[in-house]
Length: 417
Length: 166
Image 1 (tube, helix red, strand yellow):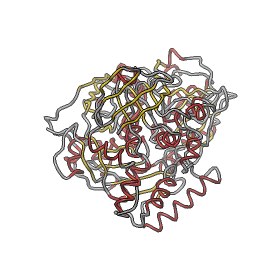
Image 2 (tube, chains in turn blue, brown; image 1 turned 180 degrees about the vertical axis):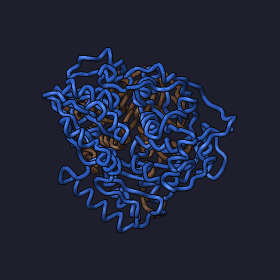
Image 3 (tube, helix red, strand yellow; image 1 turned 90 degrees about the vertical axis):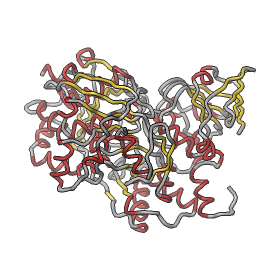
Image 4 (cartoon, chains in turn brown, green; image 1 turned 90 degrees about the horizontal axis):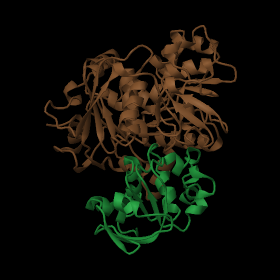
């Protein structure tokens, strides 16, 4: 009778658990990123910790400000490298490897049925590989690194049934925005989301990663696609054996509620400033002047996203006065895009391609906005100040909408091009 | 556990970017973090927060980024209690696990406005606001104990060095 969340947390707790219980769990992985490693090291020093309990289950990713953009960040990076060496943390991904969540999935580090923590809210992304990925704060991460365990509340689960198929020019990002429009940004607070239905089965790994990524924007603790043939093909391509059943709920699982979304009904959508659920159709927002177009992030910085943008930018050019910034989610994405000729198309169109990583999304570097500027971004958050300036505005949309808008210099429906 | 003080009240969907802007993420000193608490609302807000022991808010407080400075900067600013109609999972965890008590209560949060004096007994689930008694759902015992211990790190320090002062 267990949902996938209950099944995974039962394994991690060492006993059967069900929704509503507070339990102690041992994760399969506990990762951190460069914006948190400094705090973790400081905390360990303060409590006098000299030994990490299981370094083989830990990992460090430099993605938020990589390569370092200032003295403080550079010093954090340097201290973190020394810390990893000292404690034998071999899963260490230095500048340019890419965003933690993307690297985890594309290299098959995380597997179906696993419980994975990372000191980053978008860890829900990992649910695309049928694992329970969720974010932690710095003190919590420091605690797990020291003890191997932490408390969790077992969440209830919302079953999201996707029917139909996406139309041309519409993608998984539009589906996320449609869910946010219909149900708001609080619908899944403390809850898990499981995606089901023929529409879910039709989505490739890239689309699943986008949907699970945006799960946290609906408040979710975890967002999961149960293991199926797409999951199996992903790991088969990597040559990594998996246990399919560990990544599937039981057939008589009990869900808190069910939500249905018809993928075939969706139009290109955008989230207006300054909330992820302030949604409008791109058609209604057409004509809004933009200054920056950002294509990247753990939401939409994958090969499929760059491909969608390149399809629009082939033979076209970014509008005068607009800068288009492309940040591949990982070095593997960048390499594949180079091989396919996508990068050449993007550069010919006037886009700038940056080092793989979180890039402009986190508002730290590589695309901070100026006062009064408007950005259309393929990332996941448009809170005031998110892209580094409280006096700027961010619209969230799909890679195709970002590219079409970059060409026009105004928000533009990709289906109209 | 009894806490009382004056409340400063925020609205709905206040993100952790607003509570603590990303550009200060590398600050590890909590006194320095406190100088930027609520700075997303304006540069005068960190000063404005001083003197308020209670932070009130509407729905979905602390949504977005997992940054725990959103909790620790408030703590270092002198905030001793957070009351909201609801909170994001990560913000709630960051508060509890750093020893900052939280109450999620529609009724209690709605009763607060700027300057309201509130007294709350976390263990019994009873609060007083303007002479009115309001009951709220207590945190589970295990979480109250983490708060009472001063958070997970204080607990860890005692485990590593038994006999030392908290």
